[in-house]
Length: 190
Image 1: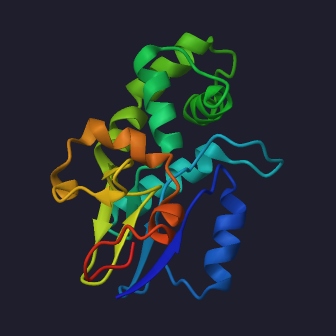
Image 2: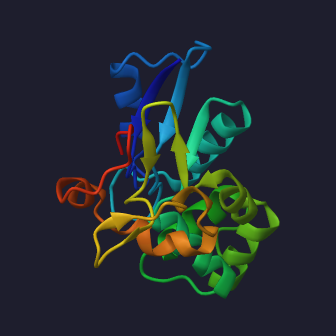
């Protein structure tokens, strides 16, 4: 199996498609798998296509072509939907996806936009399909880092079983810094 690993798309769907094509990704090749390390949405861009990106991610997960790791921006989006109140990070993402889902009515209120993401299964799809990490024989893939003790600068022995809701702190951590300061997973590359 050949992995095509990418991260921090932030709505730049056309750039993702172009990059995958240039890297030799073939959607119909059964040996090609996409591994997305999170942060699908929430940045400013002229070519931002949150709805197109969401639809593509969903289709590829459902077809077994994509493994999706949850990033801090997925967490921001889920939190905004749960609270019913978009933040500066999520407001445009919610509007863009909602408009894609509700093409006939682009004048929905913010509350109606949030509700449309719940009604159309966007919330549950992201919550249920974006993983905390993905592990192969030699690698651990994550967004940020794995759970570790910051003061002691050591990873937690039970990081694989760490409660899902406790991973939030580590999604925004700098995994490179962790590795460069000597925190390692025996036999694995993070």
